[in-house]
Image 1: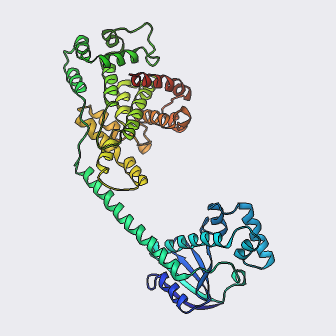
Image 2: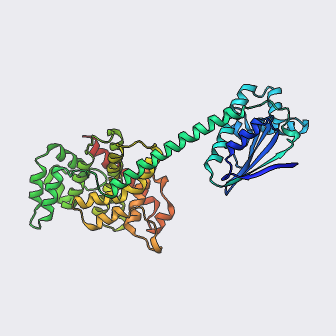
Image 3: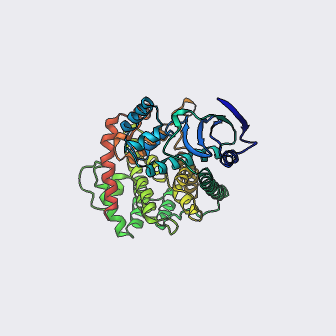
Amino acid sequence: MGVLFQVDLSFMPLHDILQWIDMNRLSCVATITLEGEGGMTFYLETGKIIFAASQKKGNRLGEFLVKEGALGEMQVIQALTASRSAGISFTRYLVENGLISGRALSEVFTQLVEKLLIEVFSCKHGSVSVTAPLPDSVLNGSIHLETGRILFDAVRVFDEMNRDSLERDAAIEAINQRLYKEEFQLPVLPGMLMQLISLMEDEKTTFQDMAKLIMTDQVLISRILKIANSPFYGGSGQVDSIHFAIVRLGMREIMNIVTGIQINSLQSSDIPQERLQVILDDALKTAFVASGLARRCRLDPEEAFLGGLLLDLGKTVILSVAKDFHIEPSFLEDLLATRHAEIGALIAKKWNYPESIQNLIRYHHNRNFGGMVNRMIALIQVADQVVQAGSEKGVDHELLGSIDLPLDTVMETYPKAMDSFYQIKSL
């Protein structure tokens, strides 16, 4: 096989090389080597692309036909074996034996070539070697793609992808800048909570003071009593007054329940209510699970409740900021995952929650940092995993082991926590 020429892609782009081959109606093999990406080969007969092969799994024609649903895996394997034995091209064998129509095969092959071309266009470093003659295994095939047309389409798609990528990057950078500079509105603390926090900060506050304030909201009273009588708190005897509920559960626990109820009722004109409600519902579920687990682990249940409740509240701010920009859902999810903890800590700070709660929210995704395990963070992570999975089956057993938390305890706590959640949602 003779080498017609070799060139670096930085000196001569692939589309120029293929156009030159097409213009001169050459029959040759163009082998592309990409830095760190393997390579691929295009086979051209009188300037037209008749076959292509890639070193990357999934980008070979047989695999691509299976992926696109054009043929079954066994059909492809048998056709490859039979075509080699018969000494004819794979594409010719497929069409002549009625496994696929020439038109359908050409459409799938066009998609594959376009994908391979875009992959080369996207790579900054590589080289091309053009050799002749063509191997017998690809001659007399059933596909002859117009090289100029496929190049035009591939370049157009690549340019659109680049433009979309630049617009997306600019949007993400703008969102990050607004988050960094804190150019956004944090959720406003509901009025009832502001008054309760003020009461709790006064050492002279009594059960009667708290009861008097809560009794101004009859719906809130009903919800608190439902929670107080739920299996989650496991008390004996019916709680039939807000005074008794405060005595049984304590002022801090009532404060947490009210916080959960009030936050779960937050609304935002900037976020679709369905999306917002999913975040708020998951927050309340996580709070109840975390609180229940904390009791079993001899950790502060009130701190666990607040940490779980405010865990993902930062997502509401990011979604509110992101509404002004257009980015694909997958990139928005990445942004939510990477930035929500710090924004959640800001919300907790604005709402005057203790620094311990702020740090719990800020670092709630940390795992075994420096070999040290923060038991409260690990516990909240367990609660979050259970809620996201919808059952105890979604829990990381290594995480459970790091805080000596038996899976049976999680299994017992989860349904009781869900009962309390649905008690709140029932009114």
